[in-house]
Length: 420
Image 1 (cartoon, rainbow, N blue to C red):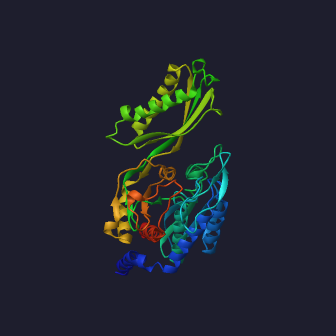
Image 2: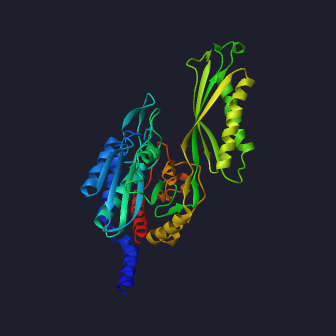
Image 3: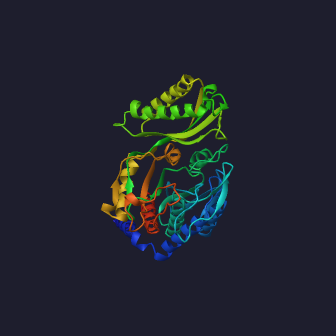
């Protein structure tokens, strides 16, 4: 009888916890977010952010590991009773983007990226992720009457490590972040500038695309710009290759099955207006939501690129590199997580979504243990979703009000997972 009563009390306290997160903690979360936003750091260079996180966790009495995958921080918090191990992850890195909005805490930081000076900005919301997880850590450290262990993973280089370096979730996994103690499941979130505050969105199974980075090097023949017939023009060949790649999506991909994207994000060739250069380089990305489609698209790219170049008298080589696997939400974990989210935020605030072609290296954790990843509302008050500034742009903004719901969601997910 006593055991039944204890389980009832535990269940009720878990349901009511969201109202007990005090305003002082939520205000601190917002302040942390502003400080991190004003001091953004690029991938594998998150030194100050990592120091801030590590000091906070240490002050809470949480066991801390630093220098994981270069600048990553891991905190281990044990409950008062033995049980399962749950990991919670937040990514820390910013982007080489110059901020252009009216936020009073906007970034003015500059850094060198790929040999060029650039502004640095949290243009994807990772500052909010860090602040939310710092808040969750404080709440759970002060309310640790749960079974098992929570492992807080503050990850560097989600946007990808600098060229020639390793980093991100995959390197953290290689260095054993899911071991000692061995993780049973992992949760992660991503704020979204077009999702209303207070709402979260999820999808069972594949929610975000697999991503590959490709590099195409075109070799032509240099000539005077006034005598194109003397050249093999690599810029023209590049244009034909870009056009051809899009036919792989429009003519070779079964888009009624799943979405797919090929995008060229960078092309460099030549240095002068009246010289046809001899080389060109293109860099881009492939996004897929189905493994068979992915393999077919890659095969067609490898066939098409050298043949198009040969048709115009040049040569071309293509290299394709894995960036992130499919972000796959474990169906069983998703089912229980959705119940927790509805408990924390309300039945109507938890919305099922379709998969998106963005990619997330959170997938590296999900390849090893069951994981659940969801989107958190951050739409600026007064904006419509259609007017929301896109992620990875200078105008990007999210509403501080969304952070409260992120803390409540992650705490509820944690307490429910560790309640048995």
